[in-house]
Amino acid sequence: MNNQTSNHISIIGGAGHVGLPLGLAFASKNFKIHLIDKNKKALKNIEENKMPFLEIGAKKLLQKANKKKLFFYENDLSNISKSKYIIICIGTPIDKKLKPDLVGFYGLIKKLKNRINKNQILVVRSSVLPGTNQKIKKILKNKNSNLVYGPERIVQSKSLIELPKLPQILACEKKSAFESSKKLFLKISKKIIKTSILEAELIKLYSNANRYINFAIANQLYTICHLNNLDFKRVRNIMQDGYARNLNLTNAGFTAGPCLVKDTMQLKYFTKNSFSLGSAAMKVNENIPNLIIDKLKKFNSYKSKKIGLLGLTFKGETDDTRDSLSIVLLNKLKKLNLKILQSDEYYKTKNGISKKELINKSDIIIIGAPHKAYKKLKINKKKKKLIDIWDII
Ligand SMILES: NC(=O)c1ccc[n+]([C@@H]2O[C@H](COP(=O)([O-])OP(=O)(O)OC[C@H]3O[C@@H](n4cnc5c(N)ncnc54)[C@H](O)[C@@H]3O)[C@@H](O)[C@H]2O)c1
Picture 1 (cartoon, rainbow, N blue to C red):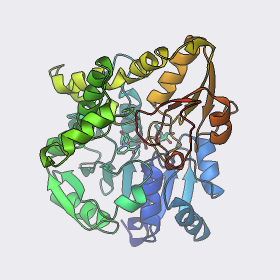
Picture 2 (picture 1 turned 45 degrees about the horizontal axis):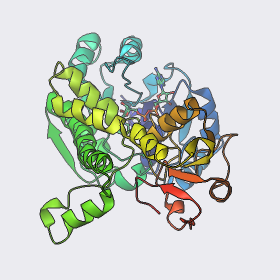
Picture 3 (picture 1 turned 180 degrees about the vertical axis):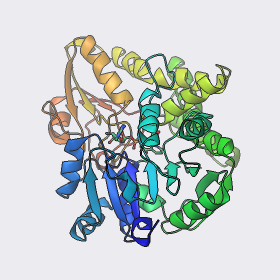
């Protein structure tokens, strides 16, 4: 492999939430990045300096990368031989039965098998079911044995802030491939932690399950308070007043999004349904929209009122609605034939109105996502009812 190619990185899934920021981070270190993605529209936007999603600090880096011609936009694997490093960042979804759906993922590996050579380093960045990398090794046998698992651990929309700070976990059974990938990732981060492949797979999924279960603990207390007409915020505050052992109790909220539920369910599958904490957390977290509807129904003549849902994304400061429980709530409200208004700071649809208009026109306001812009909103609580699980207002 000559010098030119060792400066080239192919990122498969390069237009996605993990692949694109990673590409920007490497481009900021002057690597030439082949963004390979099946989403042509997203690639076109990126080429025109338009970020396809909200990512803090990305715009300037994107403009720079395009200006310096460091990004190549590709729709298939035909140029893959130019890159020393191939990083896989495609989605690893679960199906309707909550089981990992890796058909697309293994389909890609099979295609790669015919194109990859012995010198290239293949880094899997996606969050995968434990055991997946061993299966990849089997598929690639005799073609390439430089397989590295380097899971992404950033929090969505803050990749460029977190990548330089977070230690990178890298797992690889071959010393030379490990050293090579270590050198690569040290260009964008300060610390590398070496683990076995199975450890890295488990660590990635359990990190998300850990967060998911933690949020469920708060949501469980919120549920108990609701069922007993107690104020969650007051109960939580008293629990934490001068009592440091309770400070880990988070706020309640809609806990979902593209990773936490999925990765918890991947672990459930991996443990052959014995991940009881994960299953219990899902039951608690996914029930929160029903609880909000319960709260709504306690208001007199709610059926004739205008209900405003403020914030639709899966968390604050993102435009991502994947697996958003606010959207689940919206659909449940629609099924009840209620008069609904909707608004979001970042996720714009033709039905969306501004936050001011929503507040003016609604009788009951529900906070669906805790965007910072809602913090200073003034709502006349004598005239309007507010359901704010996030306690943002
Ligand atoms: N979103 C996050 O914050 C985050 C954080 C850590 C880890 N992860 C993990 O990273 C992986 C990717 O997540 P994401 O949020 O970036 O998903 P995403 O949907 O935003 O991006 C995936 C991209 O891959 C493309 N793609 C899918 N199949 C392809 C194929 N065969 N060839 C070329 N392109 C293909 C899609 O068009 C999409 O642009 C998942 O395993 C996820 O669990 C995500």
